[in-house]
Image (cartoon, rainbow, N blue to C red; front, side, top):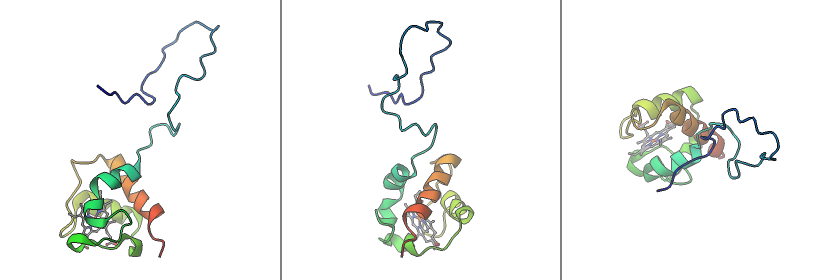
Length: 110
Ligand code: HEC
């Protein structure tokens, strides 16, 4: 079994001050609870939009050409649009926002 333990273990109030235990979390990217929008995109979005956002399968818009604001992207991702499936219930709000932000940060480069 593989457990995702990044930042999940909180040492509660040990009173042992002698150990140098500052390096307990080795591989966390230390961005607290940030959701990885890129990972979500690769998992749920590439089937239609492609890795580079411009695959346009099933009539998907080229995300590089999208001029939508974050809020509008969140709405489309949440509720779907035409052939795009809604992700409400599939992704959490935080995940939807993260992947919407990812499409802004990573595409829109044309
Ligand atoms: C089943 C195929 C499909 C999947 C999966 C899909 N999309 Fe889409 N997406 C579309 C289609 C089709 C459109 C165009 C909708 C329209 O305007 O008719 C679209 C439009 C969009 C738009 C709006 C672009 C614009 O400027 O109008 C955004 C943003 C977007 N998708 C993001 C995502 C994200 C993020 C994911 C993954 C969470 C995703 N899509 C998954 C098919 C898909």
